[in-house]
Image (cartoon, rainbow, N blue to C red):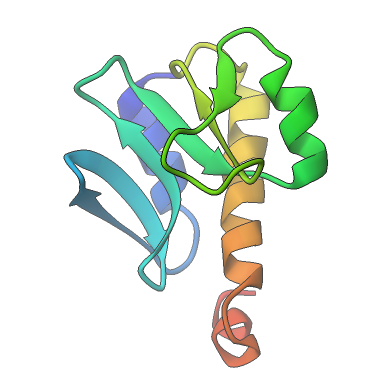
Length: 112
């Protein structure tokens, strides 16, 4: 998947905004990041995951614990080619869902 298609997919979720933080492109829900991508560094990106997913994902080539993020809750993926399009979309959707689930119930209802 190319960066423009990836960007469009991330923005297709209701309430998603984009912005730049720490010189990286971020996709957010209610100002909470669910994807952060280093477009100037080969499109490596990080997503939130469950502790169960973390072990499985981190065992794969091109995926590791995201530096500066909560241990075993965020993975960094080397580039957009590490995962096929289906896996990539699932990763983004799961990350968004996990971030949304931590927001107040009233806020969650706006995006369901």
